[in-house]
Length: 289
Image 1 (cartoon, helix red, strand yellow):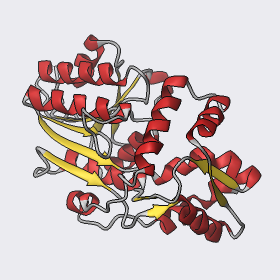
Image 2: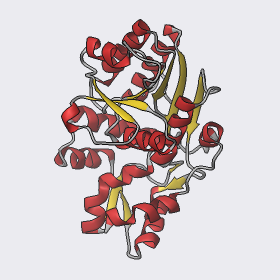
Image 3: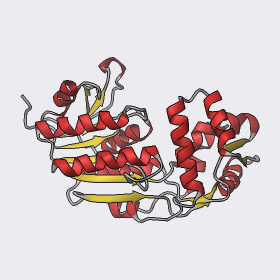
Image 4: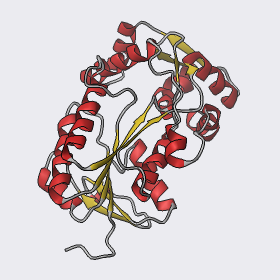
């Protein structure tokens, strides 16, 4: 039985890139909350955080993790099972009486999109709407921290790759996504809202390379490659085929200029201006050294 002092917020995906930043944000606000992990043995020790075991493939474990929770942050690992796992989570949340789900979605989520990731996010969004649970949909554009995936080639070769041409993307810092999520979980007024999360400007990948070069004080260049070549590179790097195909679809979406809009979602959700790419390069320069 839950007592009155038990944390009423649950964060899933708590050890991933975005989830760990949500954990930091809530901890920094001295907000008590639960963080769901698959194994308590691997849970870090953090003040104010109650870790609970939960498995997205097991509805009973989800119901146990969610019992007594009022607000939940929904995020799963990127996998070919993400849609069914998130739908299972929504069912569990409805069964135990969760009142509000803040879901990490994706820019331009749409059931009719040619991009598989955007379709599955839209399907889950609709399931949450249909459940009657209050929602906040966080739809971030391409993560600035996605450049960390090219760390080895940036460090070793001074270059990174993509199939995007000179199209611009309004990238967003993961820390701003976490702040938007945190505010939606802490404060009322975010119910049944959609926040399109971007940075303050749209940049081409060549411009990203220029700004990264300035921060590192050494040349870094962007190399545009055909989609087929990028696919081969990703497969060679060990990405599973389903994810490679999804990323190629993402790049085709970016190449069409469909991710260049600058939206006010970060400010609307947090009251703060989104971080510029220069701030990301300064703060993360050590990772590229």
